[in-house]
Length: 266
Image (cartoon, rainbow, N blue to C red; front, side, top):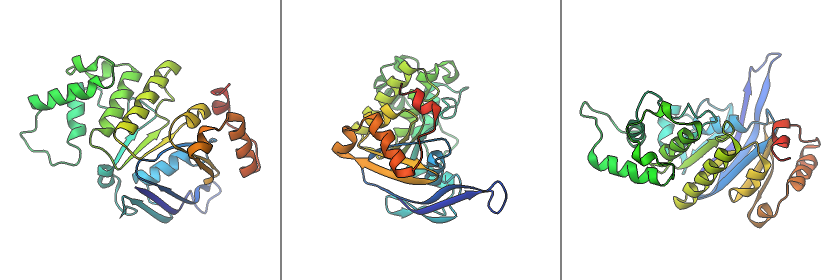
């Protein structure tokens, strides 16, 4: 469903500030894979997601989504294949628009919008059913402005909107990092439920090693723009945090230096 082939990206090339963000990454996700991604600051996690989303073109390599080469496809055209939820709950929705208006935009993504664009009664009923799935009571608040929702409610709505038109690949970019622990757990459980029930192919960046082990069928760790290990199945299920740290040290030759990650697992 997703193939990255020898993807490299350097920022500020040829200058004193040159930074190699991705160093020849190759990765294949099969249909239905739910991959968690972990690594220290500057490891290349978000840069990899931006490569998939088309935020910038890689210096070398190819990006294929469901067999289609999208390497040279601009971000707005590539969006029809993807769903994405960012770290900031404010980024995935329009605060001044109602819940139903935001959902209508999501369901019409990729379609031509004419002057008669509006929300039908049937669509409102569909939106209510979709919102019930979140178990947040939002199905009774269709006309509420999204800006009035809490961060957790807004991120759950963004997640729902990103998956309403089953994307080829769902990208979750530390999408619970800005939430309190209890709300983050609820949004993570919702994410897992949506991915499993719709058999979505997903990549989830997390700074929390417990979550990286708990969720998904596969885990990759990145370091200095490379994937240093990739575990799946029973091997992933049986991992402990100390084993994960030992694997990082053995693969990278350094200690895992990310206070935010280590504190979240204490």
